Image: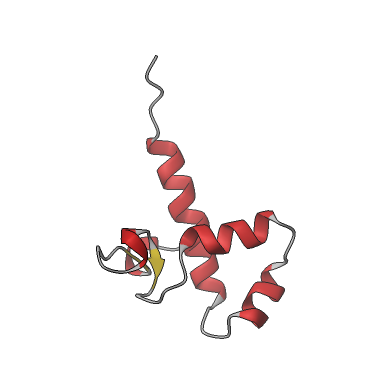
Amino acid sequence: MVNYRQIITIEPGKRSGKPCIRGMRITVYDVLEYLAGGMTIEEVLADFPDLTLEDIQACFAFAADRERRTVLVA
């Protein structure tokens, strides 16, 4: 499993503090939204040549970890 903590960065002044990939302005949300919208991983990598497969895997790992930590308050 990819250690997303080495890839996903959060900087208050960049993209309103949203989780980004390696300090770039591409957010985890952007990548996941493209994939959820039907783009393939290959298409995302072609559209964003600065991204790597490991970056996309880090987005999945980050989202999975965030989901695991989500607590339902009733």
